[in-house]
Image (cartoon, rainbow, N blue to C red; front, side, top):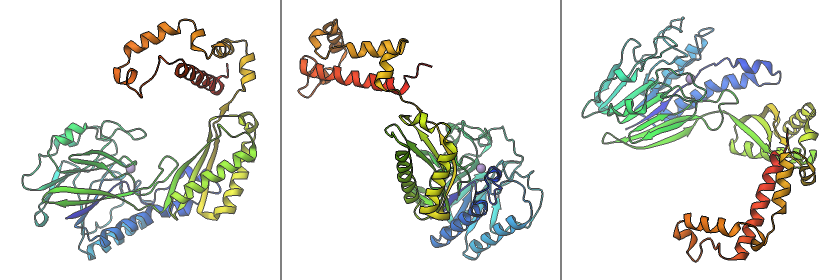
Length: 420
Ligand SMILES: [Mn+2]
């Protein structure tokens, strides 16, 4: 037996945040949620799965018109003709009270009720699916607590839209602890709500498949669903299948060792080319961030418009419409040079000077003997005594360690030495 577990389709998500960018490929991004869903349907048919599970947030909210629901019905019809059933719960975005326009429910879709947990038994497969939909957007109760115990002799699945014990960037809905889920003795927990894929547990399996298609710069990386293989009422394996059609990626460019504007552009070009390669032919949307304590930090100040133009040009020339630069963020910090650091009359300048004054010859360093002896006492014998251990009784080794430590400390001060 095998089934697909997907969640957070957010079909026709309006992507309001993109409206402020006049160059955003809004139609491509909006169409992407539908295309990713089509990919899910195709995969289900291709893999001839026994059923499909949907963990909530099928829709982004109530529909503007019926076309979203009609599209959904059309796709479910394709599954129906292939004999594939679908089981789902509603989440915070498509909670029962939010979908104001009613439409005939596709006949192969079973939506679990919102008033109390319900168990759907598939006798032919020896499967029991337990779950409850969100009655309204704000669900602060622990829904899982009321789910029934596992049915003996069945493969038990829990369908639940939840933030578990809290996930960054996600509202705390239907909160519960992993232990609450494990206590039910189910073989698989099909979760929804969290848009980042996460295997919370593998024994038993507790999985957030993540959203089907990234919709903005915080939903990065490959998105898709889980294909779950089951034998003798046990999960054999869980595969992540990538289904997204537009890829969001953070393009982080480290400028620590870049000392010219041309160098900035060259580094950007390399980083963009990596991101495009990783997306495997998909369109890419990216936010470019420059980071690091950089020699060009000062030069970049007040040049953000120039930089953005340069990067947009570069991207258009190399990748055309297949790459969209959502934003360019300059988040570098100042890098001092050594002379500047040493001439500072504040605490950091003084610290740097005293670090450099330490001699490399261990014999000349006052108090080093006692410090090393104390250190040797604390080290486990396999570190201090072994042939390949730390030879702290060898003046050459200690001399080298002193030089390395000085370089490391001065390097750190140069990165953060801005005494403001
Ligand atoms: Mn969601």
